[in-house]
Length: 97
Image (cartoon, rainbow, N blue to C red; front, side, top):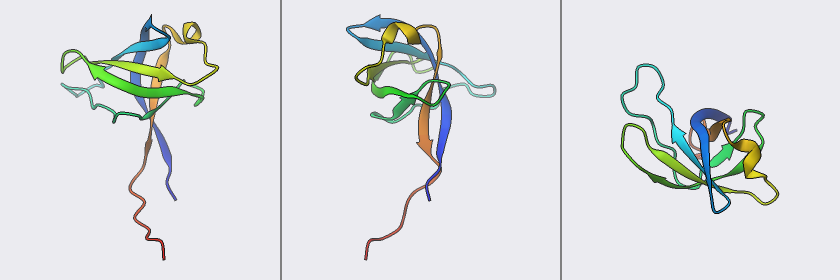
């Protein structure tokens, strides 16, 4: 069974063509933030899926993310809020027989 873990992505800063631009936050003890994979699910603090990571750009130590929103999500509600990435806790190595 795969378990979904939330990992802090950063804060939603700006809107651009119905997409959110967020800036990564450093966790204590890190010099460079860990980057999510492209198309990773992005959620708000209530675990509601709001979109996916579309692109990563900017400096290595404080990158920015473009988040493509799901249909029906109001981007203005997310501005200034913390966003999270859903990650699985391991690989699903089961073979289909």
